[in-house]
Image 1 (tube, one colour):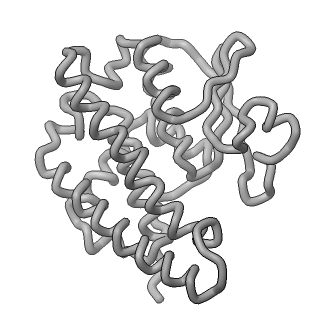
Image 2 (cartoon, helix red, strand yellow):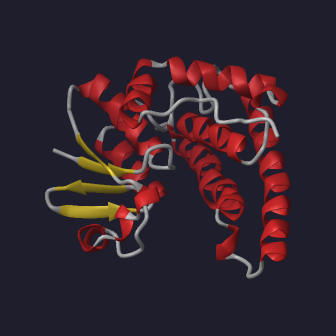
Length: 218
């Protein structure tokens, strides 16, 4: 049985929700292990043996660990194509992976600059500049996702819910931490409400103990 190590509310939610979709489609169950990032559990010797970078997610199967979200999600799709988490037609699949990779290598690191500015600058003033600039860029990325949502049919990658939809939910939640009011992105907010209502997504959110609304007005 596969086992997913996840941090509640972190990017690991993407494969977590995917595993729930797979369970619904195939009946194959999975195990989970919550990694409390705020307590530093990702730096324990046991966890570092699975991922020396101390990051989530980690997927373990048959005693072997797989790291990096894109690799994990690609593996899950290839392992369970019947779940329909990515298109099967080669060009459509490549386009889907292009969007998914952009989310992972551009949108996600932008938020990291908001959440952990000390990783990128020394001194309080410099860190505040990093955070402010990154929050504005993150807003731009969310607006691009909202434009993508306008063409959703009905999900971002077509007829079936996918990794991209799960990542879109994660990003809007993170936007609240960056001071972005989800109400200012109404189409995005409505879309994420629909994603969250999907039974597989709702199950993953319940296990992680997370809610959509993270925005607190200044």
